[in-house]
Length: 355
Image (cartoon, rainbow, N blue to C red):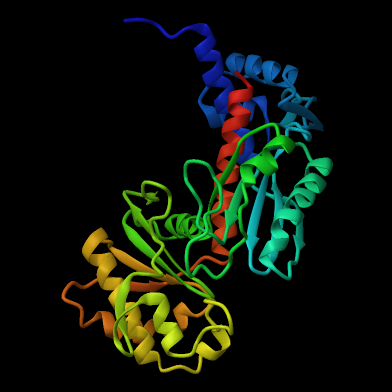
């Protein structure tokens, strides 16, 4: 049997030490030996290498010691300038930018309101440049309230999408400002990932009911994006409307629940609409999801969807195949999902940098 090389063993040891410090924030070498299960000499060598590489630093703090209390121990932590992940959310209310460190803490946050989606192309570069100037940004995740081409990260314009940014390529805009990758996804997909972490359910559908309509299907713990990344764009799914079989988005037009001149749903006006009629249309969408994806649970999110949970459950109880219908539980789900992914990518990038 071939033995692992010394280089591989060292990289594994360094990863254990780094991930322990990411979790516990500061530890002595003796504590690192306990948490990692590595020998004290192995830990000492790993700490030495990581300090030399600039990834770990001596905090200057010491354990009580001496005079019969044992040796004084030095506390180590991740180096202060180790780098952060940038998280950007592009939404109807503006652009939000967060910096997340390897501990998972948000160490910087800005929000830039926009009056029109067309402003995004001009505001996004300045927001990113401002953040990069203040922090050592290693990578970026982007949540966009528009469909996203999974192959390129470009935003896609589909008929009846209420928040149309236009021809925007976040990877091309942000890539030159960063040293690492830029990952772009639809806001509903990010929300579904956040809900997956909270639910602990491997197979579910996330139905997003807000100014726009969206859906994400999670199967075997993974968001299914489809060939081009447009899976879950449910606006044109045929369901039950006031006049009969109708595209889902057209139901709101027939009920007079759109904002004038747009396909965006008027949330304030919707709250006065007949919940039974709305639930019937949503029930048709749920039936399609159950038929095609066989989810264990259907999660209802968005600004107005959970308020109709009772009516939706009543409607779904009449479906030929039953499914649990629950309200979303994660606050700011799209940003939460994008932030969690950014943290995971940042930690992996730091481990890779140690090799």
